[in-house]
Image 1 (cartoon, rainbow, N blue to C red):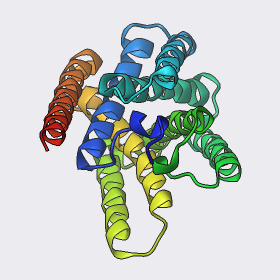
Image 2: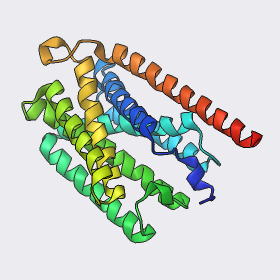
Image 3: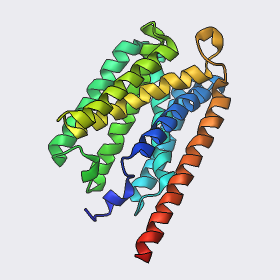
Image 4: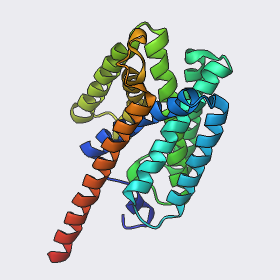
Length: 254
């Protein structure tokens, strides 16, 4: 349990899930800001954001310990890149939300199968090499891209709207929490189910915040929503760093 890679990932606590939702919601609004508000288009935005993802990913892979800002920068870059990648598939290529979701779900299953066969477990607590850590990040990239497609499908194609989609996914996440505590179902499987669902939850909440009221949103815009969400995420990271610093000080004193 004392190997190098394990120290590079955060503990899976309530704070982790709150930060994950904040990051994925920011990824939705920031991705839309690049592709639509700044008029860069889905293809150019995807290339730019994937480049940022690769830079942050390489920095994470070659780091020697857990750096909160770096870790959440990779999470955020997978979320923003996933937003534009999904939109490129569903809208530019004309695949549609349902077909795009099916393709991305199949790709994610392939990643999970390869991970399971080569590493023996998909538990984030058993990541012991850069190869497995890379699979972890690839799974996150595909899960966030899938989550965007699912969120758009629920908000636009299902008739639920942004608020209805967010409420549905919120109920599903609550169900996963109950299953985690009250059923013998695989904790690893439930973790990844929650990880995937927090992305469409963030996508629908992000759309709810940024879209104009005529489209069912609150009208804060992509720039305003992104600024507020970025501030929230930064504050949460700073709180986490402070808590870890206090724990380290207590450990040294004892």
